[in-house]
Image (cartoon, rainbow, N blue to C red; front, side):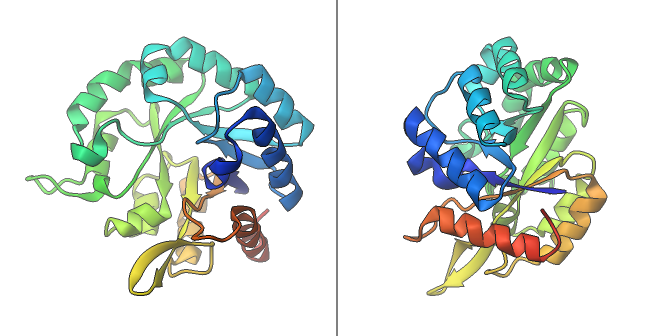
Length: 252
């Protein structure tokens, strides 16, 4: 398994192409060799490939506009092939926070997922907490999604913080979705002033020894460090502390 940085952590520094390029250099200087591109300004695929190559980085996953995935699938596929990412991700189900409609989502996105799989790439769904609410039959949303899409056509970017925030056990869900989790988000959960908050990996309470054990067994390739909110700290320093902690655990 390889360590990567989720650029959503440093999205405030990627609001234009100049800042985006400088950010990639800073990420590489920390020691990361892999990134997920998410939350940045618009970019052309050729530009991203050039900047990644210049900094010795590989993009292994994106969060891409859901409408583009659904309605302009062929271009999304070609763009990802241009800059070398096999994983095409969606950051959240459209409208999911207001009320997730799993049947509608599956109906709308199965054709794109199938087309992506046929191209040799892979569609990825990123969870938050609402996917762990249960319906009247006792099924979680994550289970409904796993049933609605064939395993070869959709994987899951399981986010350790959001799984735990939703009352789930991150290690358990990685095991349940083995073979469908080529990339996961490592995000710790701490308690500050009696409230849950995101934290640098290893500075919170998530049991990462179990997470990493199950991820290895589940076939996970990329461990992508993410911290949506750094609570006033420099996000680059937070990414650096997470990187150093993971290296100290024998990862790279």
